[in-house]
Image (cartoon, rainbow, N blue to C red; front, side, top):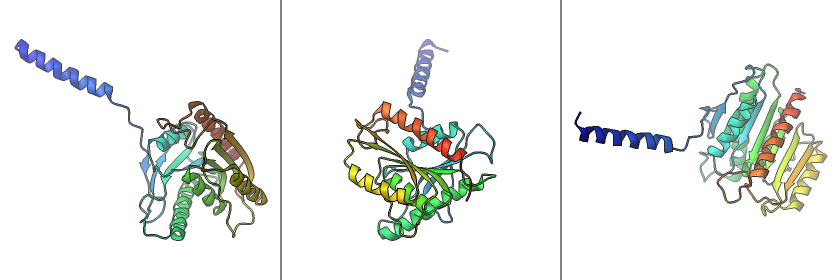
Length: 251
C-alpha cells in the first residue's frame, strides 16, 4: 500500500478509536413493560443478577417531572445490584394535558398499582414491595401506598407529603422521608402536619432533613447536587427497605 494511503488509513482508524473511547457510557435501560392494559406510563424493569426469581423483594421507583431518565435508571441499577427486582416508572408520560386533575390522579394510581402487582406476581410470597419516589413522584408514591395494602415501605425524597385520603382509616406501611432543609417546596410546618396525620393512621415514620441541601440534592450534574447527602440518602433508603421487607408479611 502506498505510504499516503497507509497514512490516511491510520488517521481514520485513530479518529474512530478516539471517538469510541471519548463517548460517555450510556446508562443501561431496563426491559420495557406495560404495567396495566393500555398503559399510559413509561416503565422499565431491572432484574437482579443475584438471588433467585421468586425470592426477590420488589421496588417501584417513581420519577419526578423529569420522567424516566438516566438518574432514575442509575438508581434502579443500584437497587437491582442489591438483589431487588425494580420497576422504574413515569406514570404520567402520555396522559393528555386536557385530562382533569381528578382523573389524572386516578389513572396514575392505577398505573402504580399495576407496577406493584407486577412485582408481587414474581414472588412466591407476595407482599414484599416498597415504593420510592423523587419530587412529585414522592407525593405519588405516598398516594399509591395509601391506596394499596400490599405496599410495606415508602420512601419519599424532597416531596410534598399528601396524607389526605378519606377512605383510609389504617395504613400498613412504614415511611422514610428525606428532605433538603433549604428546599422551599417542602415547608417544615406542612411536613409536620402531614406526618401527624400519618401517625394517626398507624404509620411508622423516619424523617431526615439535610441541613445544607436544596431540592433534588441527589441529582448528579444539577447545581443543587450534594454528593455526601445523596450517598447518605441512598444508603439509608436501602437499609430501611431491606429491614422493612425482611419483616414484611401479607395481612
